[in-house]
Image (cartoon, rainbow, N blue to C red):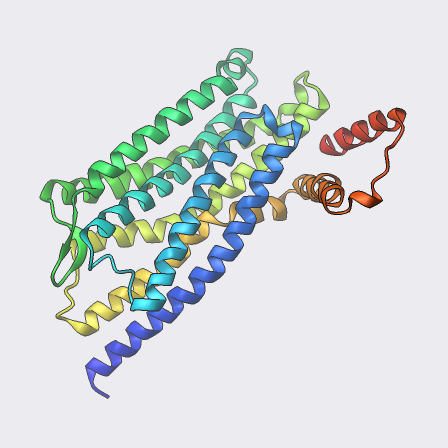
Length: 339
């Protein structure tokens, strides 16, 4: 068997792998992030919680990334690649949008960990330092900065005849190699998220000694456990792809070497699919490791969404209830939220 046929077989396998994993990730990602948005925006318990606000932004960013990712999968299934090596504008736009969503995901996880550290701290002044209004300001400023940063770097991507869509600016290559991937998009969010989630977990273990309402203590314990597990999975899924990206930027493989190019594409496809799990897994982590979150999801789907759906779709079966039944029902829902 010739090396050309082997390389073609590897490229075809990488294409099929990318299509199937992309569809699976998209399906689970859209469902999971949509349910996250539903739970964290519908329950009164989460509406004034800063960490829930950051998770909501992360889920919105993940949804955008999922639709962006499935567009690349569709292009791959039609043309055999994502067509970034054919259009300079698409080459730039792909990296601008992808990097904006990725960095937003990374730093919203960091914000969640940092917020939980301050929220569970035994010092009152530190707990009062972070407010929801301040968190919204910081999140808005960060997202604006990340978009501007991605536009500035993405404009340095161009289509090379043999290498495809690559960074063409020497300064941009050096910046990506020594700062963007190893530090700003790698070590920095990993260290921040890991350190503050561990500190928050340490704080919450002693939260019983503080004079706080039981609902607040339960919520702090729930959110801290969810954030800690999210950070652990985040680090495990991010590291392999970061290492690969640093290598790929410094040693791009030309299409004139079919075997090496095919192996590189296969490795990139596998590591990218592992990294893409980061954008769909947060809901499933929460529902696996938090029994309280499972009850809250059930409450939203059954007590709220299902009741509304029945009201809209089956108006004939609706009956006007006496006013004295409304209050007990609302209080029952609130009690389930606080469980």
